[in-house]
Image 1 (cartoon, rainbow, N blue to C red):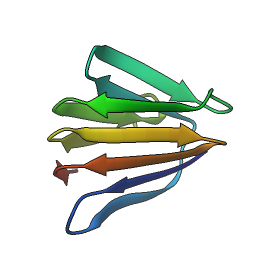
Image 2: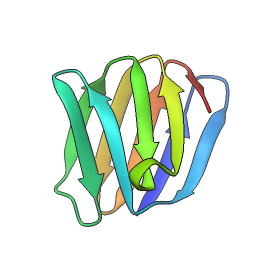
Image 3: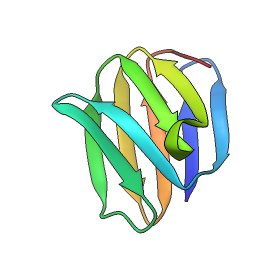
Image 4: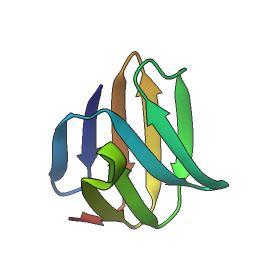
Length: 79
């Protein structure tokens, strides 16, 4: 699936991933290929990609999952 992590001032990440774990407002959740459509608020925490191969720290934001495209609009992020 295609993932983009975007902050107000830059694109932090864009690429293909097999899994992504997010710090949802109500707890952690994971998105895999062919996931149902979803929009969720994110709290500050780590986005973990591909089972831990890559991690990004975010300061909160929103994630949208639709047709194997995942877009994260983060308030701030670092690798």
